[in-house]
Image: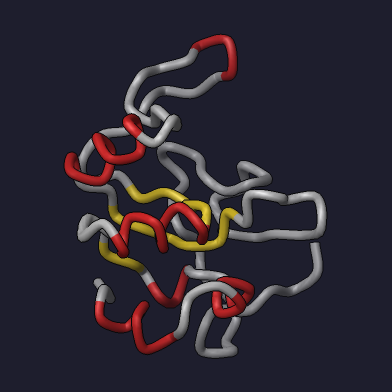
Length: 120
């Protein structure tokens, strides 16, 4: 995979290896044109966000063994869809962001100054 950058234009760092995250399940918030969800925002999950996501139609907390998905809990890090993070922000329940692990492609959807307000 080509070297991808974070929102500061630096080499992106891993988001989370346990549970393994990322569109490519490589621990990084890497993306490419096949990633229609734009899974580029590295977040630290909260129960509030997990409940919001479930009511919005994406249950991230329930394990799905058929997809080798353990289910997520508060405190886990995860590469989240930029659009979903923005939706949560507008609803007042956006989780904190690890900016050094957040892909620069996120900036096409979310301004840096807003992301910085939620920096870990």
